[in-house]
Length: 364
Image 1 (cartoon, one colour):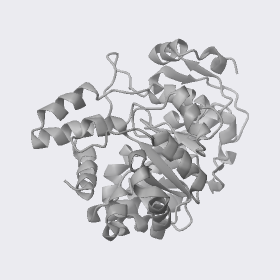
Image 2 (cartoon, rainbow, N blue to C red):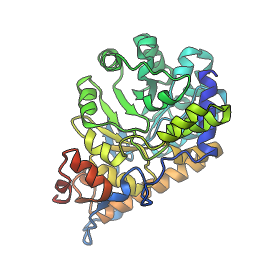
Image 3 (cartoon, rainbow, N blue to C red):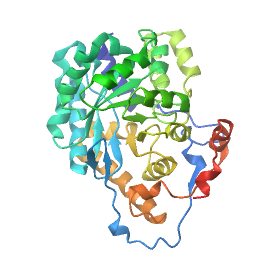
Image 4 (spheres, one colour):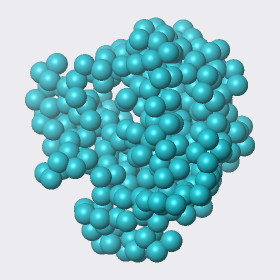
């Protein structure tokens, strides 16, 4: 199967199947957000209408701390989806990432499915996307082509070795990735975001990524789309019993998003992706240390309908975030990082065992 064929198959599986990380045995979401409580402010002393959700990210201003996270492209049938997503990003003044551009680097005939994003969002912050496993293959010239393809403001390098480990055709040679990331960070014409794709980033890897020169980290934690789950469905379709078994075993593998935000909050901006399902989740992420949040799976079905449906879904998330800010007494996005937060349950236990002081969030 070609890279392009996999792209449309992945997109359709995300619509047709339940591909999210499974809930815990207690019925809580794997992301950890159910363990996070923002301390209510009964006297906010602010006007909800006057809240300012604007923020700066990598030199660009966003009207809300929200990104349409990397999803698709690389197949002719994905062009309309990217057009709808990009149109909504332009309309709402938020950022957008494209799916892996590998297919278009390999076959320039597929570039249009990505280029449509810049066409429909001429003023938006747009970031490209290439896998760490392909950096040495494509070199700086290939990555610059990906930048030029969409007029990218930044380039994401994705880490998806969980998915690669389950795919029969997966690239499982992870040697030299950090050195390749460092080289790209030092030579590329735009800032580099290093992102996980559903298994999270721990503190030591976050330090290594920062030291390599990344301008931002996208934690891509456990709790949203399980790419092990997606590959499980692919394996079942082709009768691959081994990949089916491995995919099921690793469906919930990874670091929960709430934990990964804390682990990765070091020196560069952190993007929270992996199970952001509401503006309340976004507010919790920002309070834990994220600079902004990314949403993907909840937008797939709306994107198949059109820009209006995508914009409506994103507007709901933004308005939920606005309400959460008001109820915490926050006038600006920056103030959310100072809101008292109580961390409970598995998330507290995980962070405590990892050596993080969870009480400091509550003492603000």
